Length: 452
Length: 131
Image 1 (cartoon, each protein chain N blue to C red):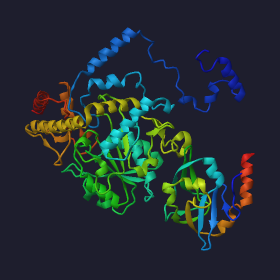
Image 2 (cartoon, chains in turn red, purple; image 1 turned 90 degrees about the vertical axis):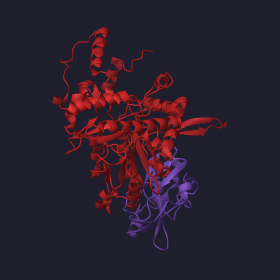
Image 3 (spheres, rainbow over the protein chains, first blue to last red; image 1 turned 180 degrees about the vertical axis):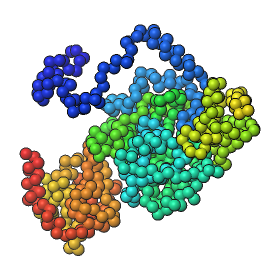
Image 4 (tube, rainbow over the protein chains, first blue to last red; image 1 turned 45 degrees about the horizontal axis):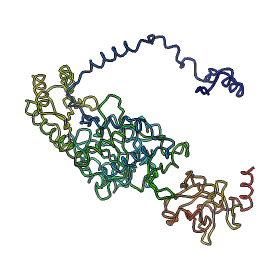
């Protein structure tokens, strides 16, 4: 049997059945000016050897810069075993299997992942992962709107100190569903979201408050107070967390009196190398009470009729292949490969290894801050304690400094002018366990020169 | 053949309504509905205090194979929900017209009760569906 789905005869017969002239005629309703013409600017195909040489030359232009840039993706050590194992044939797929029960090994991996994420976040339930941290936040917002039955509004409170790209992703995904984000200002001295800043919203109807930990500036937020405030106002709490930081900080399940309701975050720090465009993955956890409003897949452990352990997909009834337009989300899958890498990464590190990574990253940030703020005119911008990122104030516009240092193959950080008004002199810097004292000295010396 | 008690009224969306002496009504899903859905694993009733209008989606019943909305057969205020269903959704399968009731409503307009289908009319709609 030829592995060709439709022969010309079959196509003809289908067209005759529906009374269409040709396949092109099926697209008649698309205005002609919107149809792409021949792609005549694309060059002719070229031999593999030439293409490899050209791509190699372009990759070399990127260099191997020294990385002090975080802002959402973090340069942690990934043990070689992680991707050696994750890319084995048995694991090498980007998808949750659709013939789920036929893939017990994959299902068990997902089950282990869910267990690890539940423990790390202190939540009862985790799903099998979502596309990335930013879209995960959008899913969490939509989930909170469905789940908060005390609220009639389509509004959520989102601190200005949440990663601006995440806020943009939430905007693109939810604005056409009538969802509004109300921006909560941060304290320009502390670099934190204060409960005082929430006072103006007291008594107003919002479905949820997003609580970042740490926030985009690297600052540790006072999560207990924020959580309690939101719950007193009948809002749900969406925790947006860095998974590495959770090895040291109180897990969201224990925030305040009742704990967070939904937890999301970017999983990249758990075993995914930094790379423009990913693949990364998002994680998503919640309380048991909200599990039926959670999008995505959940793998459960079950027993067969002979008492043997088996893994199975569960709680599918609200997905789009069953609920159509009323589904909880259009997500019917997960980021299988990146999630597999994360599971292996966490298993290799263990709780102690993850805590060491976090503790070293934190201590390296403090070392870096000591070196940088010893330079004339460089100071810490905010007073709040941080995890492995912080904002420094420079005597020159941060963008110009970043550009100058990139000439020396140093990624100096993220100039806040790219996302915030009136913070042109502020630079968000990051240190992970990978940065050595020599590398920090190289950065500090280069910065000093650029500032002279 | 599914049971369709004479004394109840029905909506085409397969909810039943029972009028009590105090003028409040009980709402559940019909024997036919529970049978079509299969074993229920979860019932999400409306919230006590919700004001609902006829035709509103006001809850969800979820079985091993599907999740379906429950529609409001009458307008009014939800005054009670069947708390037992939280742990025992199978009550809806076992006793759809009794212990499997889903919520209780204080009707805004009692005349709406008479506009609902009688047992005979509901039986006819089921037969029509099968054709």
